[in-house]
Length: 149
Image (tube, rainbow, N blue to C red; front, side, top):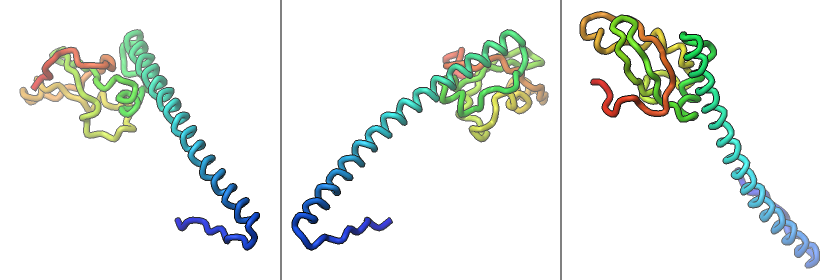
């Protein structure tokens, strides 16, 4: 966008008044930009806290009810809320595993409960079986130091 053109007044008093007003406008612009950045940072912190609370609420419902609860947080909300891992259990061999939500090839707007039918046990897959996984809970870090290969 082209800069706004202010025609220079002919009289000296008007030129001084215009220069003063332009200076005030530039100063106000920087003040408002700083306030905007501050409010945006506060808003992002509040959104992060809301996402964390949503993940913890969903974990409590999973523990209490024992099944994939709809609605669940989205993958993006879980990662933003500090819960980038989901613990799953194979419905056949009962092997537990941690899955990194950020590494999944799904859109970030996918809800966590929608992953229940898509996640499979690696151990059973080697035996040519593909039982669905059971979602247990969202986690802040994996249970095991080294992920299963």
